[in-house]
Length: 235
Image (tube, rainbow, N blue to C red; front, top):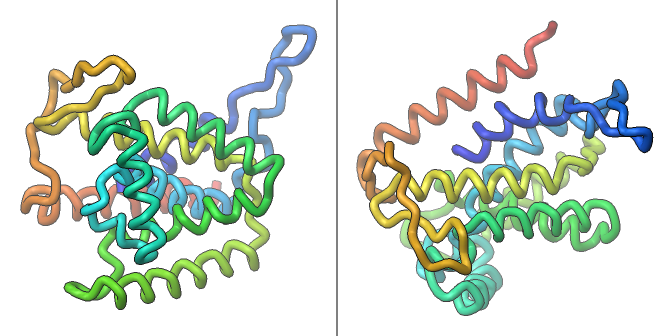
């Protein structure tokens, strides 16, 4: 949810930032001029929400590791090994920047890889908000696959462009790190340095507990709806 909020709040002003011409003078068009129509804005919110779950693929026992059944579980095992366990390399600034640039490269040069990433991120977003069948991993995976395919088909029918993909992925990963720095364990933001950062205004919550589920989630849901109305309201 924080990924969706970050996207809806930050993407339009970031997209409007001027380009720098070869003569070192700012020109009128933004860095993603024309790339953020209503369809892209909504698609970006979903993708950024999914990207905000990417760092937790280092946790094979986490719910999102079951998104697409054995496929994402094996992916999570590999990510966990490469990252050095939960809240390791994936919970860092370096990871957010690398994934952002990687997604940007895919969006511009490798359409199949781009589409695979988009499908994965849609699935992570759906799983993160609880799409599935409680206590049934296989059933949950099948439900998620079906809904992911449906949303991706909607993206195709609307002709969604992906000039913004790298930005959405980078922002999503970064907002996850910021959020985890507000919890008791903190994150190795400057990985490979091992020091864990905890924000001085941390709220000390434990993830997955009642405060997150009963209070924080509803508040964030209202914020998302409000930002959508604000961004899509006629001028």
